[in-house]
Amino acid sequence: MQNAFFQTLTPELILSALAALKLYPESGLTPLNSYENRVYLFQAEDRQRYVIKFYRPQRWNGQQLQEEHALTQFLLVHDVPVLAPVVHQGTSLHQFDGFYYAVWPYRPGRAVELDNLSQLEAVGQALGRWHACSSAFNLSHRPAFNTVNRVQTPLQYLRQHRPWGTTALPWDELLTRLQSQLEQHELFCAPQLALHGDCHAGNILWRDEPVLLDLDDCVMGPAMQDIWMLLSGDQQEQRQQLYTILDGYETFCEFDERQLGFIEPLRTLRMLNYLVWLHQRWDDLAFPQAFPWFNQQEYWQNQYRILQEQAQLLERPSNITNYNC
Image 1 (tube, one colour):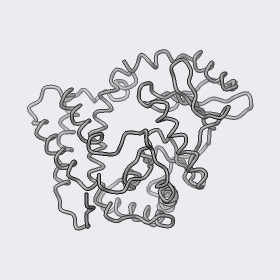
Image 2 (cartoon, rainbow, N blue to C red):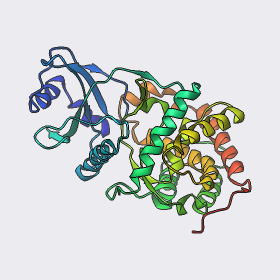
Image 3 (tube, rainbow, N blue to C red):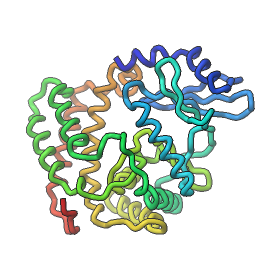
Image 4 (cartoon, helix red, strand yellow):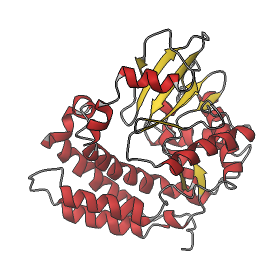
């Protein structure tokens, strides 16, 4: 059970893991908001504040985590505003009692304001810097961005576990329709870069400029994957946000307008994989407490309706020239 791993993550173990890095807290360990991993803020004897992250066991292996840290260092060399983990004795990734963990310097700041167009343009510039250089970096150990990993595997999981319970709604028919639409989409034919992978407002810190945080979901994929989650509001608002981001982005990196047609398939993939993620983590006690609606029929009825709408959007013809697969 996933939760059993984190039950062994006691304060004593955390302090021992820090002591192995010669870090000795003089404050308490303050838990920070994270469901996937366990993250704590503390002040050390050097009067500096740090954040320690314990990665969820059995999610990523050592090579995959080393790639994440290597990408961070690569981006820093190329003047991309990211926050890098602390290096101790030549490495930033450490192991203690079965846990992989790392430590970051704490940086104060505030959430980026997505309705602030000047901030949004600056985020676009940061992503443009990132994408301009990251085509030279290959995430060879992360799961490939392809139809098997992104479409077939999550849909097979949903069909097998049927988290919606007993219902008259034709879930199997809807999932088959979505699978056919997604597998045939040119999304998977586009050039791929080493991406942040989970680039939403919660992973961007504003300190006179944006600082991109938490590369835990870094992956190879199309550029639009790092852009579309920053859009919110009605269609007109999203259009203004998108072109503000792209104004900043194209200061450093050309954007392929064919990827404007990727927003809805990427949104659909995230919805499906989010359902899988919640179900897979349900034996972690933090999840039933944070997502009590997940087991309710009303939630699944809403999800069916929303995914039906996504299927309709995926059927709309595009006037943008497609990629040749």
